[in-house]
Image 1 (cartoon, rainbow, N blue to C red):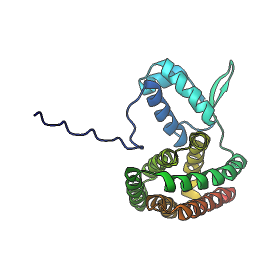
Image 2: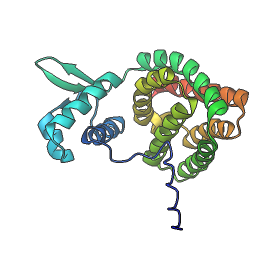
Image 3: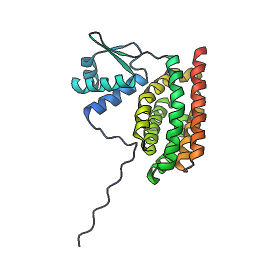
Image 4: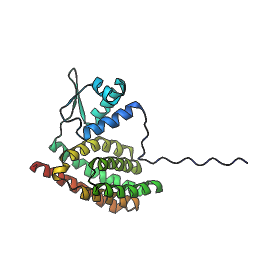
Length: 228
């Protein structure tokens, strides 16, 4: 009898393979915009970006179209493509919707997550706290993105997922622009970790309450930027 082949390792929800060139272009451009390497108001050239990322112009063009749907760039007919401006009023309106959606998604994730996903939530909580202790803002931002993807996956509601996908990048960019002046990175990590741990422990009401506390902090953070 032939020995059975080892079982294939199940990919985690937050593991991202290289995917298509468009996926790669999107991920790299999104991070460049969110971390202000491409600042608001910058006019983008497909050719320049293609050379910089070593990717063809077609994947760059398709990635830019996705970024336009996310609100990170503005496509201006016959004028080019511009990185969108950062607007406090827009952020506050966005938070009104985020509060309701994130509470719902945290609750659904706590109810529907698989055992593997619960383990990953627990690991993410620890990683966020460790990263914040090192004051590593880029690493924390990447963990936050992984956290958002995992919540959206575990909630298993494609409509909520699509809606949140339109907000996450804008929110991360706003945070990155102002966090050095008014943010408390250890507190932000602690609040994120509380949501992750509640989901990991299948505590639906606790996950919803932790999500509200996180949005309270983010809203307070946004309003404090008025004084900077």
